[in-house]
Amino acid sequence: MRHVLIAAYSGKDSGLLLDLFKMRARHLHITLLLALNIMQVLPEDIVGISGNDVLLPCVFSAPKPLDVQTVSFAWDRLPNINMLFFSSGKSNIAPGYTDRISLNDDQIDKGNISLVLKNIQKTDEGNYMCYPPQDQQAQDVKLTVKEPEASPVVTEKTKSSGEEPGNTAVNLIPQKYVAFLISSSFLLHLVG
Image (tube, rainbow, N blue to C red; front, side, top):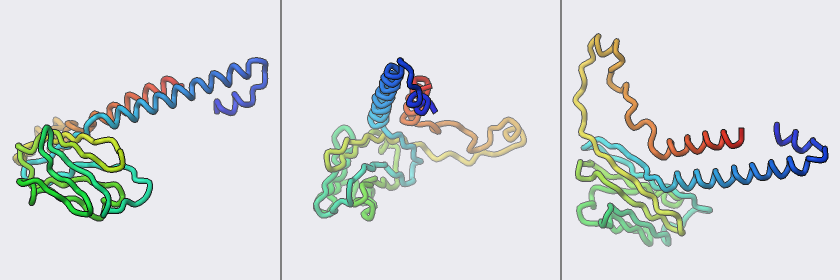
């Protein structure tokens, strides 16, 4: 609605109002770029249960389908374990991970090189780094492994107090989304 009002205003200060609008739009553009950069830098937090499989996400935009026979990418367990190197359509997997990691081969050409880590243990906890092809930015994934919880006993007391299983807010808002929400509220304040 503001855009129409500014464009329709033809008084002697219309140039000033248009400049003010352009300046706000420029600030909005810069702020959006900063917000996107913050979201790319923050690691993706993944929480898995010991003994289960977990997906370590790594997705990037490819302008066209990738040729799986020519694309190269890698996954590392930080600080210094080269878990997987993919090149010429083949995966080179580090010893100790041979039967524990896999890729979804049908998704590689679409830019999805997410890694499945099977039968995770507490020793798998830590930071992982995905190095996509085509000068894309590396993606950091932090894995936290929790022990399976014993099935809690639900009583009338726990029901009435709201302490039922699954009624927890832990890990519902990862850092990346908090940064996005903060950036969004700043943008709304700037524009509003």
